[in-house]
Image 1 (tube, rainbow, N blue to C red):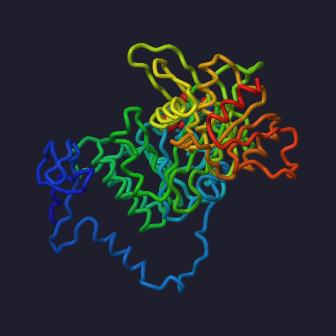
Image 2 (cartoon, rainbow, N blue to C red):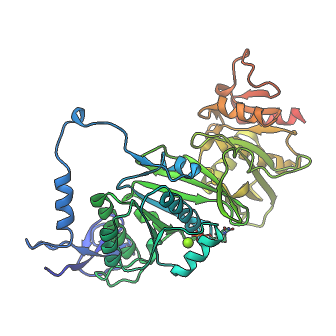
Image 3 (cartoon, rainbow, N blue to C red):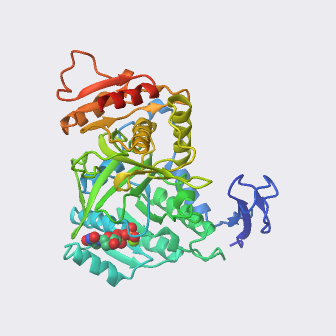
Length: 462
Ligand code: TYD
Ligand code: MG
């Protein structure tokens, strides 16, 4: 067998270099070269060829119309909220990446899912590189999974894991975590970008060739995930991220990429004594309980995925030093800077010399622009020191010209707010219901077209 040659590939442009350099010779980016393996050009069989051959045999060229377009067979995991984000269940040969902060519940959820699948007659394998078999067993007892038949392999060497997968042929295998797996072919340390990427690529190929569903667990590091799972997102079929505050009991699992289902679908779980339990009606769990309205708090209805979720946005505006700070938790910081500029320019609300902090309660991350209006109203409310009315909600995107743009599926959002007993709403004009629509009984809806209109309205409401 020809010896594989180590080369260095640029993370940005994909260019290669035979030796490590600080600066990529192709795109001139700094610190982007990472170790990888060059495929041998020799006609002898290299590491990849057998897998490629099996792939080639499996796929013939056909026209689209001739392909039997039945949906992929899915095996439900038995956990409704997890199945929701997976798009119905696990898929043969599918590769799922689950990312999230350490301690958020990745191992717990996957162990629970494997156990249900095993009890449903599937063959399962849990490959652990972080914990010993005894620790996994202890956790399974704690979760009440007595007599679990899930097979456990404590191994971190890629070649051995691949051989075991080939030997056992499970329906589903969990690799916990991909950062601990290393290959002998590379000299860089386990957990480095090169190792993580190379090992994930091999496991993905193995999944496609053998039909095993592989779940890769990845840690996201707070520092921007250098060797984290971000580099793997394009390789896998489904990317799920855990969100939530480790101090609260609620966890969100969000699908940010799914070749087998809808993206942005969310599953909601509560961490209990007996592991993660699905929350089937989650709409009000991210509201903090104030007995009376407080300044700087505005509730919005977010609709990422198929279910509306009410989330409280909090803002604190306080006099800052010479360079005031803008901090956001769960919301985009650049967007916050933009919204502050719009507030100043179009509504005359100036926070130039103030520190501004905004927070989405409960550790939820909100990426949709429909949060804009609630963020701006919360900021203005904090600055004035005056609370928004009781039972108040708002949503809508705000543009650079100060216009309030509609949010997708506004009626559904309003229905949810009405159902939960909210009484006043400020929404974009296009989202306001028709006069004769009675489904919002008890909810007074004010439609606005501009941000200054919304702020004046809030003032007149008290
Ligand atoms: P874990 O699944 O180990 O996190 P990850 O794999 O994402 O690093 O979750 C660990 C946390 O969950 C830990 O802080 C304890 C808590 N936990 C419970 O509250 N109840 C339980 O039944 C279990 C197993 C864990
Ligand atoms: Mg873990």
